Amino acid sequence: MRRALQLARNGETTAHPNPMVGACIVHEGRILGEGWHHQAGEPHAEVMAMRSVSPQDLALLPESTIYVTLEPCAHYGRTPPCAEMLVRKGIGHAVVGCVDPFAKVAGRGIEIMEKGGIDVTVGVLREECLDLISHFLCYNLMQRPFITLKWAASADGFIDRHREKYEDGMPARLSTPLSTVHVHHLRATHQAILVGRKTFELDHPRLNVRCYGGRNPLRCVLGGVGEEALNAGFQAYADVDSLLDSLRRDGIQSLLVEGGAATLQTFIERDLWDEAWEEISDIRLGDGVEAPQMPAEFKPEREIHAGSTFLHWKSPVRKLHYVDFK
Image (cartoon, rainbow, N blue to C red; front, side, top):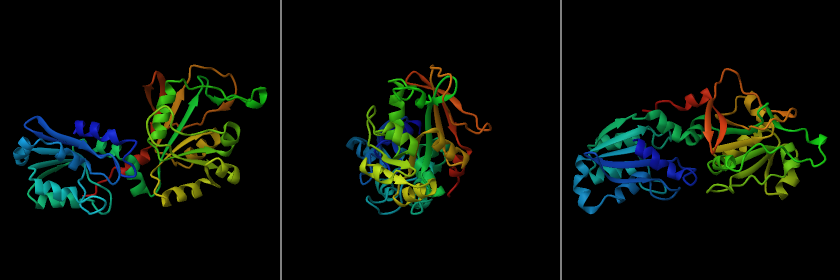
């Protein structure tokens, strides 16, 4: 299952709006085939894994196990049901990481496999498998995009200097060229990105993906900058509620909020966040715009990415995503 999880992450910038899924077919400790879901409309992970099994190994399928991170689908969409395909192929055992929350599946794939004679085990590395599809889960269960907050702070707790005090009006540079890669990784794995009106007017940010492979997210700005934002290729929203309603209607499953401080604090105070990243710079500013304050009861993990220190929070609200569907 850990190998299936590794495989699934190959689709982290391409699979959405579908969830990332990986599959691995094993016979007596030997991998016969493996695959992952590349993008919507293309074959699912189980099909890709089955296609990679060599002709001489097909006879081993009845004594083999397929490990798949998410319950095989049970409905006809852009592709036929994977659960039925596994029955036809005669796989002997299926190990499923987690049940699919999507209403057209939600246990039906497991039922099809069991009725077709496949021995099914559910729940192996369940939380890791659920975490893999957290964007998909949040959208389907919470009826809103998965929200990630991100900012960089100086060693003494500021995200910018008071620019009006400086002739150049330039922002403080707190991220390094290497840590920017991690930030652009976050951008590539989210479908939309947001800044507030002040950040938009001061920085004219591009908010695209330049330092990592992946699609550019939908660019959004919060506040009264309508025509100017539209001319720059942004979507403008009056408030947080209209933003989230619009993203939900458009099928956007994930939102990255990059600031500034007031915008970030609004999401924190409304408990509208699932994950938060604070990059800690070695630079000290002495004075400036204070960094957002996370609730004291939530304890972050300290992580190193691209040589820089990040504080990483995960909201307890995410646990609401981890429910049983069977």
